[in-house]
Structure formats: C-alpha cells, structure tokens
Image: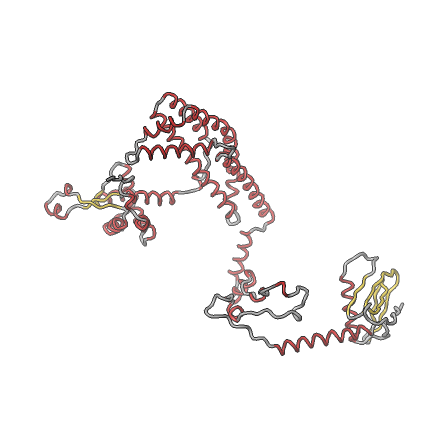
Amino acid sequence: MSSSVPSSFGLDDFGVDDRLRLFSYVNADNRLAYLWVLRAFEAARSSYQVVLHTSEVQDALISLGQDPAAMELPRLLDALVEWGVLDRGQDGARATTLAEYRNRHSVYQFTEAGYRAHRAVESVLAAGIDDSTLSRLVFADLLADLQALKNANEAGDAEEVYRKLNRLDRALADVAERAARFYHMLGDLGRTHDVRPEVFLAHKDALLTHLKDFHDELQRYTPRLREAVHEVEATGLERLIEAAAEADERLFATPAERLADWRRRWAGLRSWLAPRDDVPSEAERLSGATMAAIGDVLALLRRVTEARRGGVSRESQLRHLAAWFTGAGSDEAAHAIFEVVFGLGAPRHVGVAYPDPEAIAGRLSWWEAPAVELSRSLVQSGRMPGQGNGRPARIDRSERSRQVLRERQVAEERRHAEAAAGLAGAEVLDEAQVVALRRLLDIALSARGPKDQKMSATAFGVRLTLAPAPGRFTTVRTGSGWLHLDGYELTVTPAAHTAVGRQAEPAAA
C-alpha cells in the first residue's frame, strides 16, 4: 500500500470554488476596509509577526494611518475567516484573568492561499506603466551565469550547478514576462492614442530609445549566449541535470519528479537561446517583435502628428459631438443629433437580399424585379426573422397600387416617345416636345468629353446630336419662346430601330 505526500501545505484541498471565494472581499461593499485589514496583517508579517490578536490588528491599522474605530473589525475578521483568507485560532496563554481564559483569545493569521490571493490583488493595484519595461542588462548576467554553470559542472559542484541553473530559469522567466507586459502595453497605447495622445507624445522618445537599446543588446548577446549553451552541454547534460536535482531542496517531490522538472527547465532554456534543427529561438522571435514594435511606434507617431497638424482627430470629433449634445435645446433635438450621427434609425429592411441572388438579374429595375419577402417583425420592430417568438408574418403588399404606379410610369414613357418622334419635323415645339428635348440635351451634355467632339444621346426612339460649330448657334422655336444653343449645331434623327424621318434643319440667326 503506497501513500502520496501532498506537494503543498493544504493548498491541494482547495477546490475551484474555494479558491475563487478568496477574492470575495474585492467585491464587498466595504472592500477598502477589508483591504486595509489585510495590509495590516502583511505589514506585521514583514516584521516576522505572523499571528495577531484583535488589539494588535488595531495597532497595525493605526500605524498605517487608518482609524480602527470607524471599522467593524470583529465582523471584518469573521468574514475573512469565512472566505478562507484568514485562519482563526485560540491562544489561552494571552489571558491575564480567569474570565479571559474562559472566553479564549482569538488570534488570526494568513492562510497560505489567502496570502497568495492578497498578493495577487496588491500586484494588480500596484501595476503601472513603469513595470512594463524590457531588461537589456539581463543578457550580460545570463552569459556570466552560463559560464559559471559550465565551470561548476566541470568541477562537479552540485550546489553551484543548482544555484546557477535556478537563477538562469528565473531570469529567463522574468525576461519573458517583462516582454509580454511591454508589448501588451504598446498595444494598449496604440488603441488609446486617439483619446489620450499626450500620453504617447510624452513617452515616444523614451519608448524608441528603450526599444533600440534593448534590440542592440539582444543582437549583440544572442550568438554569444547560443555558444555558451553549447559549451555547457559539452560538459555533460545528464550530469548537469542530475546535479541540479540532487541539490534541489524540495521535500515533497520525488527524485524522479525533480529530474523531470530540471530536464524540462533546461529544454525551455535551450529553446530560448539555442534550439536545434534550425528552429528560430525565442530570443530571435523577441528581436523580430522588437523591430515590429519600433515600426508600430513610428507609425503611431506619424498618425498622431498628422492628426494634430490637421486639427482633426477622434478626440476633436468627440469633443465637437459632445458640444452639440450639450448645446441641444431639447431632448428631441438631442435625439435628432443621435439619429444623424450614428444612423441607427435607418430602415433595416432596405438591405434585405433575395434568398437566391443569382436567380434575379441585376439589371432589372425595382419596378420589374419581383418583390423581396420581408417579415413583419423586421419592419415594425427592427428584429431579424427568428429573433422573436413564433414564425414571422409576411408583409401585406397592395398589388393594386403597385400596378397603378407601373401603368402610370409606362404611360409617361409612351408620351415622351411620341413627343420625341415629332421633334424632327416640327417647326414649333409644344410643351411635351420641349420636355423631351431638354431630357435629351441633359443626357448628351452630361457625357464629359473634349469640346471639339460631337455629343449625342439616344432615347425615346430618336437620336440627338450636338456638333461643335464655332461662330454659329442653333435656334429652336417653342410655344413659349426661343431656345438658343451657342456654338453647337443640333440634329435630331430617328433611332436605328424606328422609321427614318426627315432631318430637322437648324435655324440660323
């Protein structure tokens, strides 16, 4: 019968819910009071005073500049004990009278999980832009530790091998964590530069200098670190790992577990500095990410500078928009501004397509194409089909009204065609013929081209041609006056698919 020893002091007994309950004080109503109580325990712990009585907690709060009288300290302590952040015990040795002994003195201390939860909260509260930096000086320390590791492995000094290998592992982990925080900070800065451009402009020079110095050091030390890794392995890799595992002081890890852990750590170190099979190392990837970050910072600087030079940026646009909303005289005016700016009140059903778009020719007009089926919920409430309860109802369409509009449009086009057909032989144009002539002139003149080139328009069964005629002009007589076209000769002929009519002779002044 075999028994296993837990790898940590009681932490394995904590389930997911228990671990999440450790952060309950963060969302409590008086979360600042809880935070200061835990800071009092942490301050005492830094002075090697782990177990505190209620009176000692009060003294620690006073030393931190807080007023314990304004807090319900016993209730706060009980809640922290219930959440698992603190552990409560009894200390009868503190009693000075028989009544105090019978009442038992409660003493409190951090649980291991509670202390880790508090440190996690404090790390978030203390995080700032100063923490997001790349350490360029670490490469020299890495190279020195690799050389010392080679010497220690050659000499068979297991303790020195353990110290140097452990230090290398922590240093590389710190480099990776710093790099992740730094590039994440650059991404946040790029996303918020429109709102706070002064933050970026204040740090641009420091950012570029920091990135350039880090990249130069990384380029200078990368080949030397790769060579140092090969020199360490030349002294015996298995010997190195066995020495580190032998000097490892973790009591609750078996020798096999320690060997596997140190073998994994060396594999990670090798992937960072000198991977096999021409695989790019993490250091080379970090160099590429640094160069990309330099380009991003320069591009961001250019956008900010151009926006400030032009005076128009997202910041200025939002400020003007806020001024419009502030200056609106009523709620109706503010709603109108909102509709115009954000366009959320447009009819959504206009963008609905056919179920099979290829079945309907794109050249068909709205009058000729079949109607798109719409749901009543989309038109009335803006909800797409399927978002509401039940099956969407079809839209009721007035086919009679649609037919009347279509007949009216066909009749109007027929009148234009009849009027245009009489343009060639008419001496005095009536009102319908004038309308047709003006539409043909509009079509011909809208075609932009050289001034010495003919312009023509074909519609309503006729072709209108405007030929340049410098020094001459065409005069057309209408029922309401004379129409003069200076510098052009006007000709109206039937189109190819109609009967050939007599060409109109232009009148000259």
